[in-house]
Image 1 (cartoon, rainbow, N blue to C red):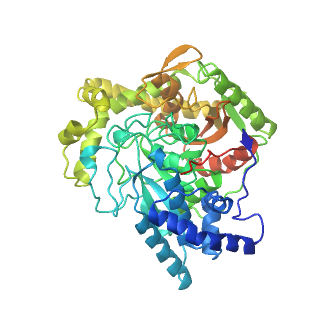
Image 2 (spheres, rainbow, N blue to C red):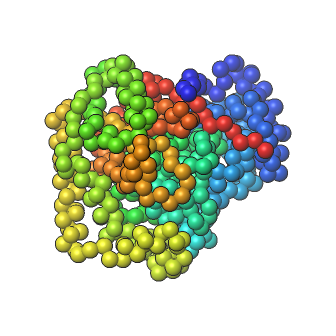
Image 3 (tube, rainbow, N blue to C red):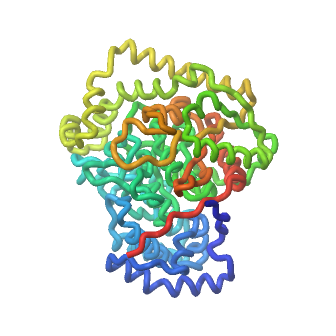
Length: 514
């Protein structure tokens, strides 16, 4: 079911009402977080956890909301959704102390950053100085990086707070969340199902309204897939737009890209502005005259019928808002993108892991990492030991360059602003280590059902935006992906504001009560 978009401002009524709500929540949320109790959520508390990152920061900067009170509400919500197993590391006392420090800075008249007091759920493959960074694997469960990852530095300098480290698919190697080392992450819309790709803990935390914004990372759909499965907005920016230092890679400076997960495009823009320093405002770009390419013969082949109907309905809403839909089938080189990326990753996975272990002085060798990895990773790690001859690797790199050139020519030929398609051929699948999924009575390989869809964005280095398209009859979110040319990220975000409005909002998952 669709829901009307929530107001951006922290309260629809007066500032006085908002202040009264904040004050009434202080004791309840603080005691719930401090005692580890999952209390039923009141309507007043729901108002705080429903805030967007932009609205929460505005309220805290203006003194309408204390950072400590907001952090306490988020902590109470994390306890309420504890069954999701979204967090690897979360220390409530430290979060509240950091929030109190933010309140003191405001009280003293100090300069406040663009993310003042905002709690961030940080994927546990992103190095944090004050918390362990396990990368979801046993060998690194106690690894304490000496410094924060490069992407965190501008976020923390802008006043953000590390709320906790989120669980992920072990070593970022998979499209489910079935982490056999630390337990699977569950989808807040259906606890039997996966939240999607590797940034699953971050996606689950944002979807469950524990926090409004979370940095994730996308190598092969690991922001886009969980965004689709959890009803979120997600941005895989042009490769290299955000710094990737201090994040465990799966490839050599090619596919791995950090990026944000949020419940609104406005919050993706906030993240982008802080990390890049692009301070100019981003307004909603009109969809009139915008050309969006469709590839029904390839990117919609074998799609789940209900997902297909939802995609068609979503595109009709986009067209009604003024966009022009252009039938533009992908040339063969672009169709090869997923296979090329998959093969390159086979060559580069183990060298990339080893380089990270050595560069950041983890004290763990590659052999130790492999020996302590969970059994469900054994086939992948074993295959990566002997990926193939070097001539084949050089040919793959040539093919990747050809894919990039062909993709740019494709955008120019059809005068496209973006292409649109479903990031996965089906909704969230049942938890486990599925290698295949059943769609409309047919068995489909997972690398087709997911990799075929997201591989082009990674391989060609596109600007990729995922938004909610709706929910299935059984209540599972379905996403729609819009891929634009490289270095068009701010343009894609501006279009995203209008696309989001045309598509409409979806209902949040129902909270788990004590």
